[in-house]
Image (cartoon, rainbow, N blue to C red):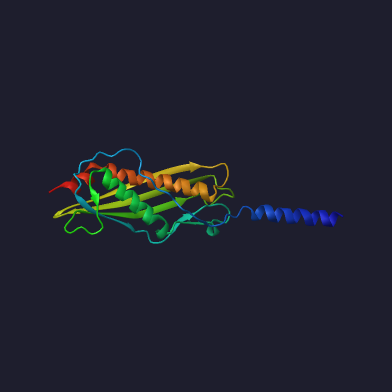
Length: 195
């Protein structure tokens, strides 16, 4: 009887400790442009291109006891089309007309330069995450050029390890903030409109 009780306790302990390992998550962020933009254009065509400039799809790990097995990823094909749609929306709101291949039109290239998720790796439980996103915007209009970097970050604390939906939402918020900063910069709109 004591032997069975001891065996049951060992099995339960193994299950509890196994629960400390966090599985990998493939996130599906939904970046959205926030707030109004001031229209300065008059319907001129602008070529808008979004590029994923990250070295790979990994953002980092979820941390915890077995951090190496808890990788977070966002694939290019999951985020670039959404960023492209939002960038085109922003260009429209600025008063321009997004055009895939307008001849001799101003060009805006928006590069997702960085997307990171960092959690402490020294603890058993995940208690916080630092999430950062950085875009590089390159505007070319005839001989005029402008390049700017725009970032956003979030430090989030948790009572328990966040699930995939929560992490997708948090990454979406940071991407949305960084994206909005790009298009709130008046230099972007002015450079696109200069003759």
